[in-house]
Length: 196
Image (cartoon, rainbow, N blue to C red; front, side, top):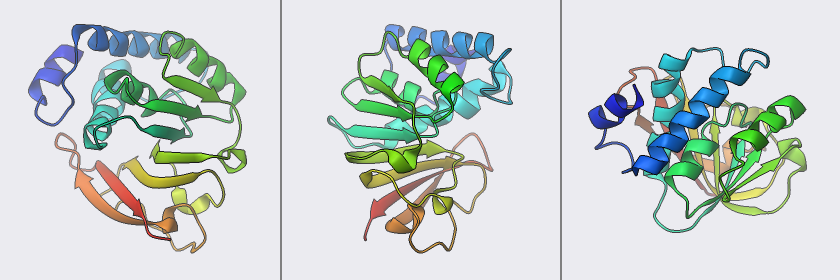
């Protein structure tokens, strides 16, 4: 299932080794098992290939080359952070998740990924500087404090991209451009460059 998806969209996604594909499949299997007792995702395993893994890899393909420090806000089931960490072993990824049970899952999911650190606290209490803030389905216009991030990448499910009016929010600190997800007419990746 994953191999055929990767082959179909190989021009839009990062090139992956057999070991990286195996790691992505292992993450999906673990997510499926844990999802039976902890609500990590509302969608099934087959849809998770395009929605969770595919979109996360699409985001990874749009990050600039070279080592980056990245924080994943509201990582939940590990998206987009875990696939980005697998596709980009040169990047250091902090998975920020305040739900303790989801944090336990993320620790288990990232046990073999040395470039991941799980941060079990609210985003607003995280300090430090990151090259990138990444997230999926998180409203950045309802987030007001957190680490200093030079750029942002947001995965969402409507063509409008991240919108909001809260002037002092995390989302308002970036100038956004939207890139449609090639296989999902309602999905998008918005990339933000900090201007304030």
